[in-house]
Image (cartoon, rainbow, N blue to C red; front, side, top):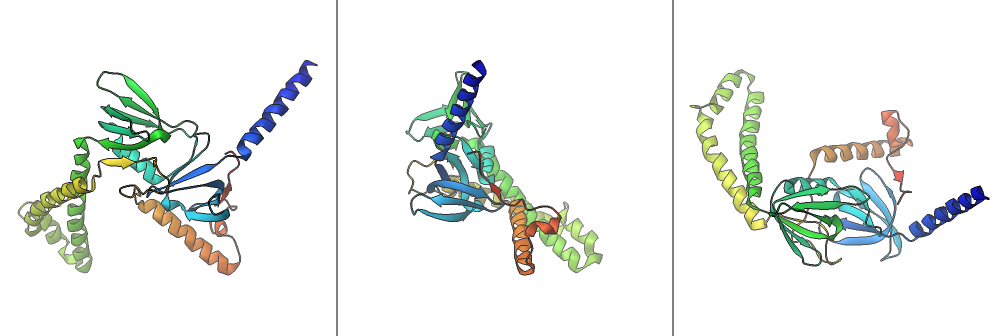
Length: 278
């Protein structure tokens, strides 16, 4: 009799979960701050397929536009490269956090615990206490002026990168001049003085641009569905771009040949996976 009782409990729990997840809604947050509400069908390498509740139709959106996805149970469903990049810019810095309810929390350090089940943010305050907040309640986070080191890094890399690329092009055009071209970049060389001037000017330019665009502020969960973020949160990834280009090339080739894109790698199709757990 006891075993039958346990079986009945298991059956009840199973059907209760089925009932709960049958009506689950997914919220798709885009990098521009707009959102869609629907039911996710599947994810591919570069797209999300879902039933849009607003227009009552199935549609697809490119993943490069998607910031993150979560459901009614406050669980993360998908995290983008852009979201991870924005988090990395903020962690281990001080600043101010503002929630969707317009509550303000100053902090000395911030750490994101982006577990899919329960994403949280931990704030270290001046009183040596730690405050935990639900990530999905955060509207924006503004870093302190230590973010300026990111502007300095961009200024140095962009200016020196241009000179190095120019030098490489000249070397490729005249291989015999490799010694003189490298010598021009060293102290006393013709290019060295120009680099000394370009690097600080470019760095100052990036600092002014970042202050004007307020790149210290990162936006996460929008307050209104139809309201854009003050700026787009998209971060370009060359690695992801090349991967998507490769996948698109495979699809176009095998569409003409009548095969599947994954056959080019000698594996079974796995580009699209069904979303069953959420």
